[in-house]
Length: 398
Image (cartoon, rainbow, N blue to C red; front, side):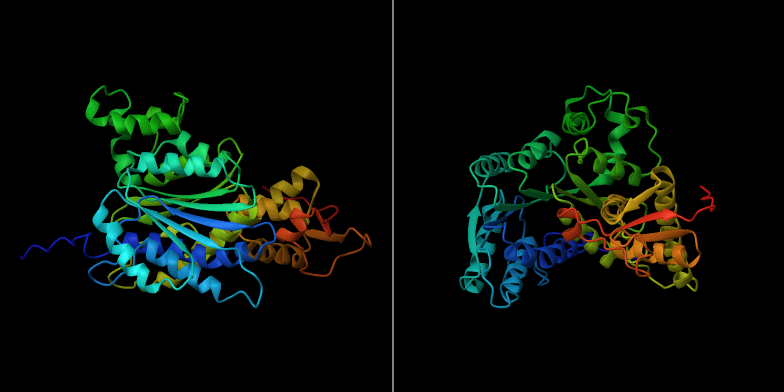
């Protein structure tokens, strides 16, 4: 049997990279226009720390090109309103990649945005970004894409410093989870300098030596993804999401993490996750060679599992608190990685099953059926419209 040739990742974009960039582009397209029209935004800076190849030999577009196209698209959606300007700052240690990107974008950029090119080591570039953020006004916004060639340049403290400078920065971080997971147990107590980079990475994210990761308790790569996501919340100071990306047909994964100081940024990330994965909003699976007879049934079951999980979460919290208002509902929904449309679906069914009642706080009577008023505007302005509580004499079972 003839051996199949391995795809050259420098010439052809692999499926997992396409999935990663699809997420990145969708996020920019959803969020850029909103930010550019917002009264609190004076300008936006997009930093691409490891920008890589601009155009692959097969014609596929890399992150700097996709970012430029998202900026261009947002410029066409202003509806006559003034838009905040955008700067695209790209960097790579390989000058030939920067030269190629500059050559391509120079032809395309007709005052769409300001583009700045760097050819620096990632440590130096990240340090410069940190200094830049420190000198900014709070009405400037930053989005930083950190897509390293591995994990050696990633430190939790560096990410924290970027985020804490002005709390005006969001970060997308891409990590090769399978590489980290494969060697985690083996290197924890290994003094070999060859694995020092991985040890430093693990120590950075998990300084508590009693953490499960140090006891060889992990049974799946997705557990590691969740632990890293939790670490990137920095004790609840930020919101963090994860989006797993299956590397191959086996259970090996990459993961894209998004960290934001604002719950609205969390909502935009969740919209992308659920658009790309309607069953669970969790991640990208490699396409199957052939569709199975029961694939649609499995998808429906996955959706049902998510519905039941959210229902249990909401009922438990309503039971514990006695009642919740629309803003608490909004926060609970997003923090548990669901969207308002999901909790609306759950609550409507609970109303129809006569399990909960929804009270209009102004009239103290039943609110309009199916109206829960969970949105960022109400949340940010602390506008309470309704309260949700269980029906009298109805026992909520866990």
